[in-house]
Length: 153
Image (spheres, rainbow, N blue to C red):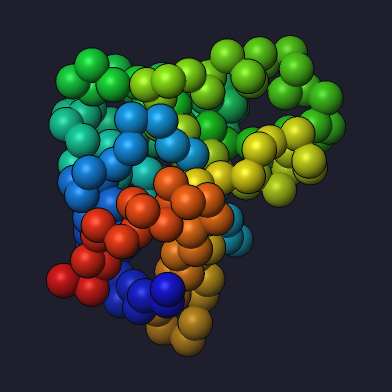
């Protein structure tokens, strides 16, 4: 599914739509795109729609930020600075994927084959004066989630 993102507000709205339409208790979204393509902006819209009221910044240096929102745990990863997928073992990456956590992972390609396939893949791309978001369901859970969301409303 391809969506035109005319500006930053459209990217925030995309995050909000996915967050407010029955997100699964446990799910993973991989966020791909060049620097500045809107990955963290999407995460900000997603987290604010779930009820987080604070700042949302890219965890470029910490690699992961944890958000506790209404009894849910959301982990926001930024793997841009990862130099070797082995580093994920030191982070205890498997511990983050629990029954009640949502994981947003920027730069998942830096992890090589160390990550399981996501439920949703969001690819953000520049196109002339705007951006394009390509949302792809990878798992049945991801497809069910997308089926419940009207991303064009």
